[in-house]
Length: 168
Image (cartoon, rainbow, N blue to C red; front, side, top):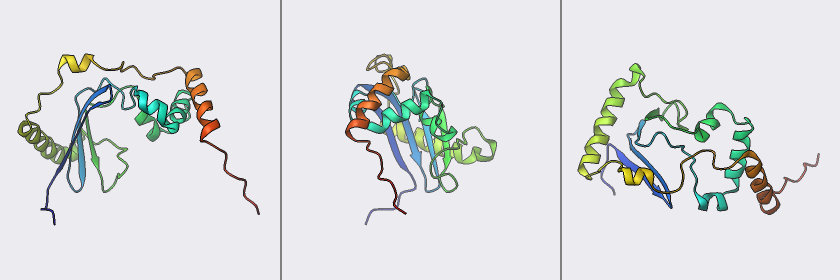
């Protein structure tokens, strides 16, 4: 049996040659995320993902055509907020960012303090200029609509077959 923990901690930094820096702490009811590189998109260039994830092409085509709903569009935004806070009981899909909302100031301060404590414990150095300027370009979107449509067409021929028609 594992000991009870009040919080879990997570971090994102380098995925292949995609550079980003996100630190998070989660309690049983809330998640706090600190984006140290908020000028970068959630969905940055990653050559492996662009070669391997058919839905990424579909999301990009839909995004560039304005076909995503507001919640879906959050993931495809060209930047992200510096701070995110989610009430996981009422918003398990983390759509409504409560950071900066005075009604949630106490939990935001608690989780920020815990994140700061953890980062100090693991001797986090933050984001260096070398890291920030390294890796693949952070521009978003990574291709034009025409390029994404051509990429999607390649995937459709391989894996996105139409569903069989229903028989009454």
